[in-house]
Each structure stands twice: as C-alpha cells, then as structure tokens.
Amino acid sequence: MRHLITPHDLALSEIQALLRLGDDIMEHPGDYGDSARRLKLATLFYEPSTRTRLSFEAAMLELGGSVLGFASQDASSAVKGESVADTIRMVQCYADIIAMRHPKEGAPYVAAQHANVPIINAGDGGHNHPTQTLTDVMTIHREFGRLEGLTIGLCGDLKFGRTVHSLVNVMSRCAGTRFILISPKDLRAPDYVLDEIRRNGRAYEESRSMEAVMPELDVLYMTRVQRERFFNEADYVRLKDTFILDVPKLESAKASMIVMHPLPRVNEISVTVDSSLHARYFEQARCGKYIRMALILALLGKESGIREQEAGKLCI
Image (cartoon, rainbow, N blue to C red; front, side, top):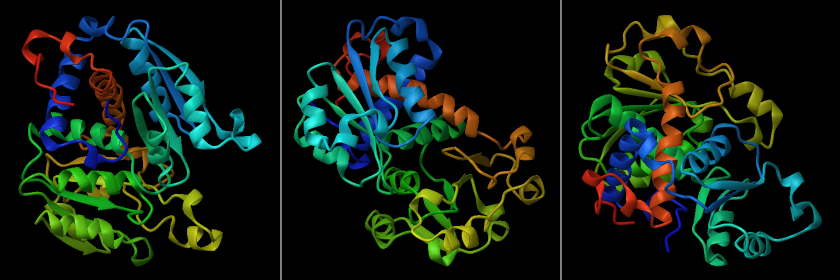
C-alpha cells in the first residue's frame, strides 16, 4: 500500500508513468469507465476547495466508483473535537481510498500513520499539494512534449504557496530546468525550497520584476497572494496587488510561452488574458481530473487493467 503525502513519495519514473496513463485516459476515457467499480473514495476537506475536491470526485465517478465525504471542517466531527487520527480510523471502515485537505501542515502525514487504505494529500496548509503538481506537470508535458530544459517563472506568493513548493520539488529533478522566482521580498521562497533547487543542481535567480524576465520564460506560473495565510490584514492589503498580469505585459513573451495558475485567481491575472494564446490555466484544471484518475488507479492497484500499451509500466 502506498500513500501520496509529498511529491518525494513518487520517483520521477513513476511520475512519468502516471503522465502516460493520464494522457491515455484523456484520449480513451471510455476504456476506463469500469476500472474502480464498487470502490469508494472519501474526500475529507477541512478547508474550502472547488477544483481539487470536484476533480477528485469527478475522477472517481468516471472510473465507475462512488464518493462520500465532507466539504468543510464545520460539516465534520472535528467541530466536536475529534482528532484526525480518529476520523481516519473511522472513515477507512467505509472507503477504499481517502483524499484529504487540511489547513495544518503535516495533517495528511498523521492520517497516513493511522490508515490501512491509501491517503492522498489534497493540500496541507502552506506545505505541499502533490496532486496539483501532477496536474501542473501533465499540463507542461502535454504542451512541450518534455519536462527537461525549460525556464519556469514562479510569480506571486512563493512563501506560502504550497503549489509552488511542490512544483519545485518535481521540476528540479528534471535536467536543465531553470527557475526564475518572481516575488516581493516579504513573499520570497523559503530557504528549504531554495535548498531543494540547489540540491538538485538546478539554476535559479530571484527577481522583483515580471516584465524584466518575461522574454526568458517558457512557463509563467502565477499564484494569488493568499489572504488566509496572513496573520496581519495590513500586510495582505500591502502585498496583494504586487503582480498583475495583463495583455501588454505579454508582448515580450515567447510565442510558445504558457501562463499557468492553480486557481482560484483574484485579480493577479486580468480576464483579458483568458483569450490569449498563452493562457493554459483552464486546460490545466481539465488535466487535473485525468491525472487524478491515473493516480487513483495506481494507488488502488488497478492499473493492470489499463490499455495494452501501458500495461506493466506503473511501479507504484
């Protein structure tokens, strides 16, 4: 049995196998409609979510399984004081696999220590969001046909942005990746994220200007400044509009450069960018369902039933 708590839980070869499976599901969805029949996914979301929760639920339903769970902490026994460990011990009596989002860093790890079914971290505080990273990586791979040799600009909240932290973890393992970290000083990437880049021998630079580095980028990964991570409202107000992407700022970008965003956005990407040839954030959300279908199959040990050309390639 395997859990997915951080991107470190997957080797790069396993991620590549999941990408192949996700692509095949996207191209031949009808071949997977009965893969998880009679199996149940529990979605335990202690924190608000739209894309992640709905994409997990859509993924399981399209695999022929069923879904149960709750969409907020207030709808769970956590409001009565029930611990994460006790909740997991109870829910595993009813479900075959669990996707969990929690505002506290490390909560999914605690859950995995008490589970006899696979646990998937669907986001824990400002720490990790591994399935969003699988979504991001699938989007990049489908666009460029590779993960290697790309210059990736990460813009906005790099301090609390769990999607950024997880994406760095995976992409820093890919040969030739170069990172440009675009943020205000107060929201620069934590040292442990920079250490990850250095440990993998990848190049990076920090910038306070989106426009200055735009011509160099293959990927511009925008993030919102997250009000819920701030202890001080004044700091949030001061920083929230530091970077706003609009069409004029894209004039110097490569024709092939793509704009990504884990969503939701507030105003860091103008709606005028939506019709740009660079915009990929809604396609990115679409990829989320298919890569989560692949992950569910792999963690449930059901990948042996996939199409002939993919059989035996997953090693999860």
